[in-house]
Amino acid sequence: MNVNGTLPVPRPSKETQPFWEAARERRLVMPRCDECGRYTFPPSLACPYCGRGELRWVEVSGRGRVFSYVVFHRVYHPAFRDRVPYVVAVIALDEGPRLLSNVVGVPAERVECEMRVRAVFDDVRDGMVIPQFTPEEAT
Image (tube, rainbow, N blue to C red; front, top):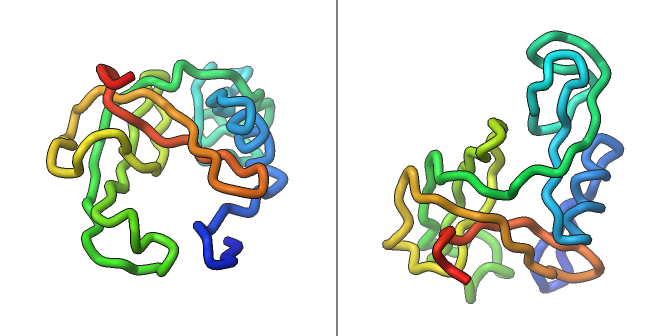
């Protein structure tokens, strides 16, 4: 992560580069195995289900549900001082994979497990766009 007095941003790796490139275009993509058809995340060099190495990045709906979450009330990094309380959640996408993200656009006390959410994109800085999630009914 890079920190310059602003929000830290991820450093894309070779394996995650397609994810971050799609996020800049406000699209959510996940690797899917050409052999067994299952999605996987985080990305790897081979399918964790069938062991094959033919993974292809495919656009997903960006819709899912809150599987689990925690509300941060404490400032663990100075860049997040103005964001507390904030929600860090495991999002179970409709296509199957789960990813760690934030739930935004709703007060933290209204977030609950099984809440339906959809992807939104936050322009953090330096061309980095972070996928986050908001309740489906929010616009």
